[in-house]
Image (cartoon, rainbow, N blue to C red; front, top):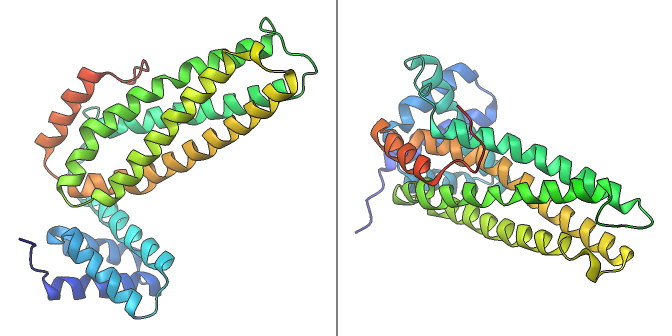
Length: 256
């Protein structure tokens, strides 16, 4: 049976979102967000968002205000909460550290593709090609990263009512896995293509993959993980997830 919405809480959230839009004092807003959000359910937040849509706010503006609401609560918890709350190598610290490595790999991949595109002839002993192979080999580590998120972190968020956001992440993971497989097949079959066809396919594949990857990492770091830190508020749950993640491994990149 669906939980009955608390109209008073919905009204408080909607009013806070309007205050955020008006530009009220951000420190006061953060304190109020932390207080109000304590018992807010995803359904009540959604009802508050619907109220703003009925008032004429655009969907984009409502999404931005809701994100600000969540982030403000995190900020207030960081300021007023116990120091060192997540210093015990919190798994999201490792996840976001890996994201930084993945951004570096995307930059390396883009540069390697650009170097190969400028070559008139491509042979498998060329330093530019060996560099490309080296970078693509490292992309497979991302699959372990996606597996850890799909199997450990996202299920907890789904149980707490955030299934829609989790589906976005899972769809991204599926697309990125497919892109990694396509790039791997392409670069290991260089002799099956003319130089021009190889360069065209490589540039297109790298562009598609890097665009999807960078957008996905921004989505998780900017929205999904801040929400996770707020709604998964039981330290024992994070410890359980940390143990499971360590069993899976951290995609060959040891961050401590």
